[in-house]
Length: 384
Image (cartoon, rainbow, N blue to C red; front, top):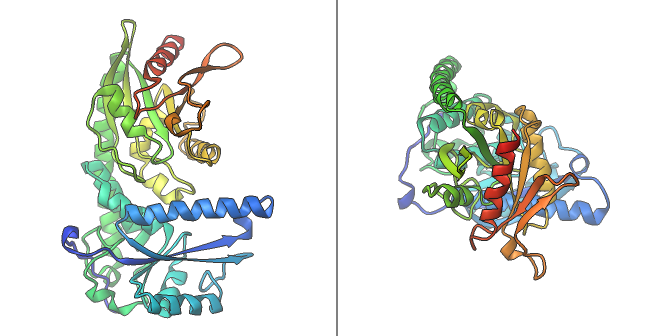
């Protein structure tokens, strides 16, 4: 259909888009007993709802379905698609977000039936990244990821997007009429990669100067919204944005941190990880994630109050393996212990059977356990 035009709009002047979230429980994605599968599915849906909120959407309703496998043309079955179309009309939905990665064909077919814009999980996370990127590198990475994602979605099935006033997933590359010339997109992608390569060289130069100073580097990693930036701010007295929302910070920040007379380090704060972080995003943010892969020690921050924190630890470790950082020593930091039941709020160092500091219980909000964390970090510096 028509033309794919991306408008830059003043978000402060427009009302949030009315969003319908669609979650499909595919048999291959969930294992175990029915109760366990249902709990994991509901947790994933709750996280997706937070992503919609982080993107600036107004979530009106959540629709769910169960299938053995995704349908090739529509992801959901024909009957479910028609049911969703009725829900869109009845609730004046402007954007349907699927908590899955859709093929370009599925996205186009769904837009025709639902008569509203459709965004998949990758597009949703990219929309958040586009809002949050502050540095030149972050903006370049987002633009590159968006263009790669859009390149297969040039022919949109939903015609009124030509006059779309803007919305989630539409803030971005700034290109107009993307579908008229794929060559322009490929040229833009090539140019962005060259720019990122230059930024990468500049980052390498800065990193080399840090390494020449013989300071050890600690990279803060963890699931998004675990309290990484709040911890970074508390330790370094920095002013990195720290909000109770997913992907509050996107750009890497580094600060020197004095731990003890014999131990000073460089501490870096990195982008948060999330369940099923799309591979193309991991690839696009390789320059930022390099800070993690080249660290001496990882401070793996965990939201201890989240009932699903063990799965979140596994999700983070999966991404760490993808970027080649899985063999770097980790110090687990169990944050938000102030939200735990009475009797489980004790701050301090947890040691393994060899007496090595393996984890630390802390509460950034209550400034509890931070001295123990500094002690554990000092031990790791002296062990290196």
